[in-house]
Amino acid sequence: MSVLLGCIADDFTGATDLANNLVRAGMRAVQTIGVPAAALDAEVDAVVVALKSRTIAPAEAVAQSLAALRWLQAQGARQIYFKYCSTFDSTPAGNIGPVAEALMEALGCDFTIATPAFPDNGRTVFKGHLFVGDALLDESGMQNHPLTPMTDANLVRVLQAQARRRVGLVDYATVARGAAAIRERVARLRSEGVGIAIVDAISNDDLMRLGPALAGMPLVTAGSGVAIGLAANFGIAPSSAASALPRAGGWRAVVSGSCSLATNRQVADFVASGGAALAIDPVQIAAGADVAGQALEWAAPRLARGPVLVSSTADASAVRSVQGRLGAEAAGAMVERTIAAIARGLVERGVRQLVVAGGETSGACVQALGIAQLQIGAQIDAGVPWCHARSEAAGGAGLHIALKSGNFGSDDFFTKAFTLLE
Ligand code: ADP
Image (cartoon, rainbow, N blue to C red; front, top):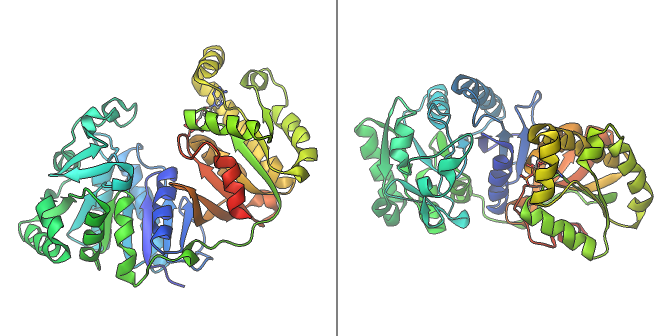
């Protein structure tokens, strides 16, 4: 069994975002949590190895990425895709440049491209400059990011500061002329000693023109947008078969540790439509109460009657008050642990369709459930697919799980998610 496209993503939700785009382009895709210890046991066209390497020390990010590369090569991957954020999130030291160059060296290739363009999400690149919606990157709010402040929208300059090889540009005028023109420009840049080229793209059409020019390139580095133009290089066309998952069964539940605006609306909508919901209180957790045990006792007799929801979701002022009493980090960690224990208990009690709301919360739940791989299915809302995974908490059996980060999804997301599985 051999994988066509092997992907290395620098964070967990970014990996899902990429896998979702690959599935929509017709590729069957699996996302792994970290580098798997064993060989792949599913028949798929693409694998996305999810690392957490965006903000760690460059040397450590390189080591993890190379380990992922070796595993992907052992699965037969014909092309490697290094996926980073569509806002090019990086520290002054990296890690996009150092990881890209280490992968180039390991693959023995002297040229690759780099573009975070993802027009569906408002990320466009023009003359090497990254726009987020209508704003340049350094005026988009990203200049104030706590871990990866982006203070320059000129990606050629940003990447050059992180890379030893020369960085160049495949500009919009070239991209607009199509794949042959892009290939010509790449050949010219290579002859001039350029190792990595930022590529302009302002629409999906641009990405579809770029795709064929990347056929056979050993390494592609990009956000998740470029993925939409790659499937055709492997003779694959969009098809609903790519997102087929096993039949869903078992009880249904939602756990939420997200306090984002969209999640607050989704919880309110679920309650308003008559769903069984329980709010858990971080202050009780801090006081030592067995909040997870109580929640499971509440849920058990209700599972047979339809989806249950357990959440710590609260509005901004309630969160501030809890954080004031417990400290933001301590409160977050406590709530994550509790929600993860509840998710595990629910699956142990027969839940096989689980929606998790919250990015960090999702990471904690996937870990508590003992999930190593996610098969990606159809999307519920933009960027949030149903997945199927074997879980230790289910005694090694499979379950359906959707991981929704903060502000994703429509107000009726929870109801809609279960309807889609019926
Ligand atoms: P999102 O994707 O919406 O950002 P995350 O799960 O990534 O959600 O982050 C939410 C953080 O807030 C988590 O660390 C979670 O444990 C914490 N949290 C959840 N509920 C509360 C609450 N009521 N008070 C304080 N912190 C909370």
